[in-house]
Image (cartoon, rainbow, N blue to C red; front, side):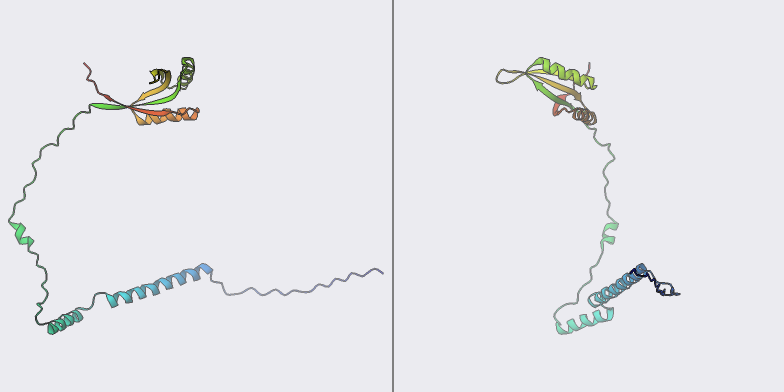
Length: 193
């Protein structure tokens, strides 16, 4: 036999809304923090008055009490500042107003270069130099003979007298997958005729 569906609805009671406003939690937190800070200030202040400066009458009583105990000890003398009278009649010489000495002109300057690669074969060096020229870099080939008699062809970018131009060229090389070695040369300044 089929069951008969009975539906009973139970009435749920809703609680009436509070008529008084609630105080937010941050207000309680702020009030507690201020109250705690005030209490800590009072504790700090009470410690300071206990160990700090005593009133003048208590200090005078202590010094009188010490003098009564040790009659041989002389009372403490306060320092006397008499430099006002000492310096009144003295003259102070000031240095003469000579112009500062001129700095000597530099006799040498520093030049920076980047060594990009080194090859035994001159054709390989020429190929890399052409690639660097296409990157708008001032590339040149230096030929060097090593101590064992071998000849190497080095690709040099530069020279740079400015470190900012050097770092710009180096970042261009790195972005194009070239590792570069920084070379530094100090050269004398020659006077132009």
